[in-house]
Structures are given as structure tokens and as C-alpha cells.
Length: 115
Image (cartoon, rainbow, N blue to C red; front, side, top):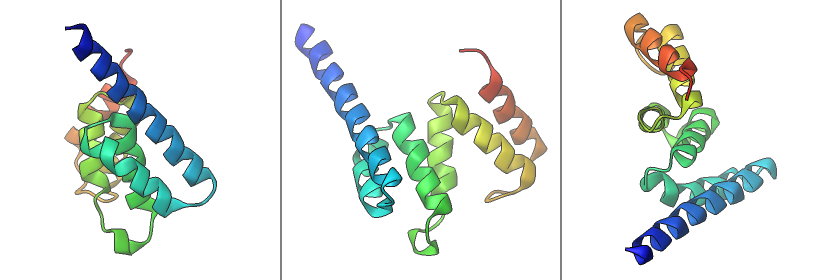
């Protein structure tokens, strides 16, 4: 059982290190490198990676496609407050999604809830 805990710690540490590496690439202006770094942890469901990859898709060139909302939904479902708040704002304004006040209130309330 200890080996499983150790393996999980390694996965979590590697995901965090990869997200940090992606942030460095973004700060340097290398969006493509950041996107490549984030893909594996996002596929594994890492909330920060999902959120950042969503931001890249939202703010990046149209060739990337509009995958932002789906990634934010997964990050919000994983309990990431900033993803919940951002989704609430998107539903409120109708930016990238159909305007929906019920969903807006739902996600905005979740985003401000104490953790």
C-alpha cells in the first residue's frame, strides 16, 4: 500500500512540475510549448492544467478551436474556484456559451464558497 501512496505522490508532483514549466513557457511567450506541457496533466484531470489550457484555447489563435468551455467545466467540477467563477461570468455574459442566469448563479456561488 505504501508503494501506491508513493506512486500517487510522484504523479501529483510531476503534474505540478509540468504545470509550473508551462507557466514559465507562457511567461516567456511560448504558447505552443505551454500547450504541449499542459496536455498530459489536463488529460489526467489536473484542475490547474485544465484551467490554463482552457485559457490558452480562449485567448489563443482561432486555429486552436474553442475547447475552452469544456476544459473549464472539468476544472470547475474538480472544485477549482477560479474556474467556477470564470464559468459563472461566461454564463452571465453569454461569452462562449449560451447566456444562462441559472448556470451563472450556480457557478458564481460555487466559486465564492469557502474551502
